Image (cartoon, rainbow, N blue to C red):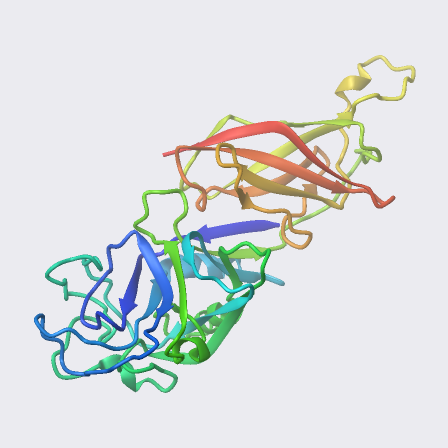
Length: 370
């Protein structure tokens, strides 16, 4: 299996209460509804000295470069899936259950160089009113076939292509949503104008709604920028003359760990040495402690940030299968989606035929360098 990640070239939040303001350089993406229980809409073309008293809806846009999508497309073989990932920075007033909508943007837009806190407002990029810059006479985002807003016209133009992620009480609040349908549209020739993330209309159109979510943007100074990934099964299991491990008492090491790997390179074949911890004693002219074996076919790998212990790539029985050839077990690791100057730890899990599952953490650590 393989996972290949790309990162956005542009993202921005848009605000119904600051409909002309650009926030393209903010470190945070907002997906919030902070409506007043008694909204009053004095809709006029924004004048700096005349505030708008209306709804307070915040949506976010994310764009991935077409050249990067072409790379994903080249790997999209067999049964593949694509996921959009965003990492939660802050949350306010969450219900025990809620959902977010991720839609396909239908108009191109300019990220701009503003921040929501700018005073005076920066108006050189995408805003609630417009896809590119502040327009004094029109709210160009209001006319899309699936565009919707509460009180303030604008808010984006997007197609009917949409996916939803629902959250329950104990779920992680990070976004990890299957956007295969939208990415498939782009692969088939549909114009790529990115994603827009919003709350459902029933929440946005409620004058008393208050739910605030903030996610790290591409301009974050953390290790949590948004990403788009493709997952596909590239596994092959041919053991040759290797015996297969059949017990939990084993020793696992990386056969070819060079300790540091170059960021931006395509992929590395990570080879795994596996042997019995207590091998059966037989007559032999060589040490049976050096006899390499294959991990069972129901073995999987994961990748963890060594410092934060976050799972960068989690175990997946469809897409993180460990392969095997006549030399050893192995998996392919793509370095493009890993943050440079970070240490990562390889984790291995084996599901045995007797129903026992063992997760192995042997401190198999490497660093990604620039």
